[in-house]
Length: 448
Ligand code: ADP
Ligand code: MG
Image 1 (tube, rainbow, N blue to C red):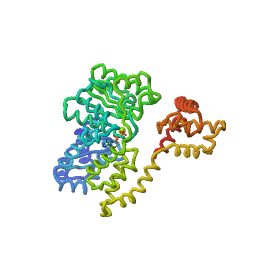
Image 2: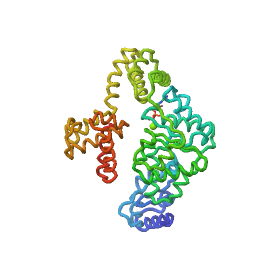
Image 3: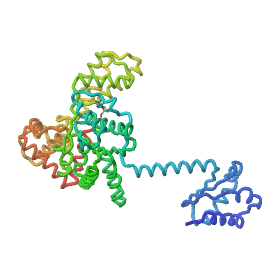
Image 4: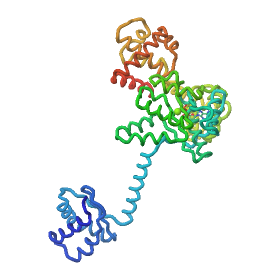
């Protein structure tokens, strides 16, 4: 380690010997400097007055440069002269950054949105059971449903309920150690810990000593063996200690493919609760509540129109309200039936276009592999046509959750053939990384 004081003393000696500087200048300007740090070629010095600092920058910097270069044996030296306040501010900032970094390293879970609560979750017949069981696990953790496994298509409120559970637990049982984590973040933390060759016990103790663990989007465990293994042992540790676990997934356990059977068994042993797409009544209630929360006044006929036309996804409900609000704010226009129809026509069309559907998959695969759609749905058995067909079947199953029968109806194949196609793609993905990447690529492009 470089001794800063010693080095700086040598620098001053160097200037006295090698540069023509008066003793008075030395005393007033240079000897009064305090060396703070030398990191690589970056030198930081502290100066006790602004006037002196200006003089140093204007007149004496070349001497300091020369002397430091000589003493440190470097061609290039960056010298900064700071005032006390600046130095303090910089140190504070550094401390803050270090604190944040440390917190990020120690953080166990993902971020939770405090705005998602039970109070603002609108309840209808399609989500009532999910809502009530979620409340129940807050009131009696690890008593009735353990694990609680919530499943249903995207955008229907699973994450909202998980956040509501945490927010409720934090408010009612502040001493409880509750952690929410997405499957992806769990994976990242594990990969991070492995790649840093950290002691595995650290990762384990983080997740196995909780009171309550919520894991979102568990379907992303597919094909990740090491992560599944870790999740399994985490589950066992918590469960055996009488702690509550909640999982959310976009499909039921029996449809989760490429996940260890032992885990699937654990998922299914507490309570399987599904959330279904909202019916018209619930859609309207949600529209109403969201309009209120965004502070927009939407007449009933418009609410009805929206509820009729925006069907599948509650995220789209929020999007359409925001669009209406923006238009009425910017254009100063009142929200009426005509206005909503006009403004949302593009939105509704886009929502339709955005959602992946079987037609889109067929079209995309046909285009990507240069194979006619009719050939994919036809009887030809060339290898390239069969390959495109397998991929279509797999994507419809994987991205749209369609049954083998439904896929068969589109591809005009028997449902067992469709099943074989899906299995084949699955196996090929496991055997061949390039192919797995190719499929991931297609999925990404279809989803944007
Ligand atoms: P998922 O996790 O099932 O994909 P989210 O929980 O992210 O869905 O929900 C999507 C959006 O819809 C969120 O903004 C959420 O607040 C809202 N949402 C879903 N269901 C409801 C509900 N029943 N009442 C109010 N808002 C809801
Ligand atoms: Mg979600």
